[in-house]
Length: 141
Ligand SMILES: [Fe+2]
Image (cartoon, rainbow, N blue to C red; front, side, top):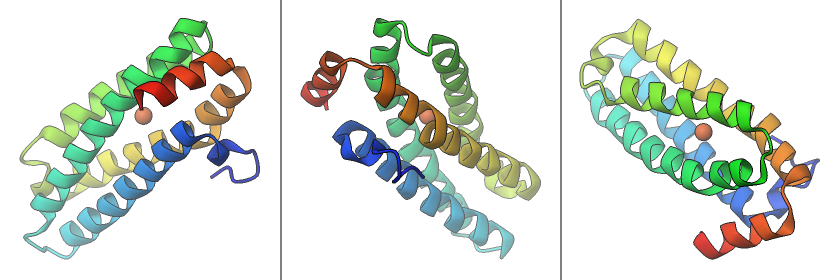
């Protein structure tokens, strides 16, 4: 996390990071349920899938769209968006909860993805996006 760089001072970034925390908590519970053979694993995984679908689409129409408009970090945004599509498809698989090895791999990719945004993309956006981008995000948020 980047409490040292001021990311959390920007409401749009703070909100995205809070969503990452919520998704990470759900993912942890889904992984633990799956490892313990708990039948709740599928329901928890469905919660992860729904939360990530909402969150990732919000990122795409919000922060990612502003970065593209400003011509900043476009290649990284393309990669992260491709990862959103892969993760949404993997999490939407209704049989994932029954395949523990795949489940662990998908949730590990989800964690890695969120860390890349928290540690790289958000601080980069804070440095490079102009004030009007943050104003647009605040209006749409
Ligand atoms: Fe993302």
